[in-house]
Length: 375
Image: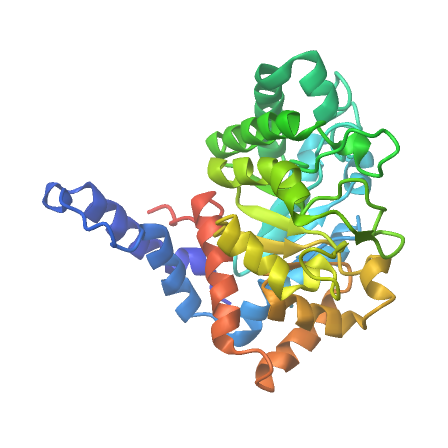
């Protein structure tokens, strides 16, 4: 199987030459960006099976051998590495494992991690990766050093992750929380103003370092319960979300965040019948009201809030139907087959799949994950 970033290399070079030449000074405003042209070229060469595979970001297992079939057989869009992967590794062996995953994939992978700092830290838990200990939490950073410390901390994180071949950090947390009894409190930067500053600084530094970033968890946890263990219903009025929770989200979008993770909360003012991750209206608001044009990704569809209400396969199909571009999963085989069958039967159109895959490819090109080959 050919690696698409190699096939597309000549096109990349041609585009770079074209953009650089003097005859192209007067560029039309509606000219298609080079990244999109390259993504469209790659998309046209992909099989349906490869396209469906790109919709999945696999997690839940720390054993490298489990992730290899995801890359090789299912053409997964990416994998998320958990702390167990690093516990008995060295920087050299951790990097080698990531390189093995990339070598097994025809389309370069997102290699993701949850390195938020504080209670959610995967790499910095272990002194062989960071001798000074776990990265500070968002709240600790804002309280002890503010924006300047957030920026230097993010730079250090990015350098560490890049040294291990990790290209996507599933952070920053954009949730607003001021009550220490809230589920999300320990992971939040604080009130809306603090979260806005934190998110903007984090995303801007990530962009500078060419490391992917992901806002989570839209529309905002607030004081709601943990959806890992059950259904959570958010009864706050829409005006409250606009004046608080949406503020850091808008800041992250403006700063250039690549992904937004949608939670499983049922937000009654937006959609009283469906979890946010499976809601057409929530995704409409994210796209049209907040102006997000990147990758919308569901929180893990294996969480109890979803698993107890829907079948594993049906949840994946609904997630794509309502507007998610990617699905966070620990049930890759079952959900992959369900989505593939839905496309083959006509329930989901190929055009709908192409829309999402194009966004995924564009962001991989933007981050340098998909590149031209060396001459």
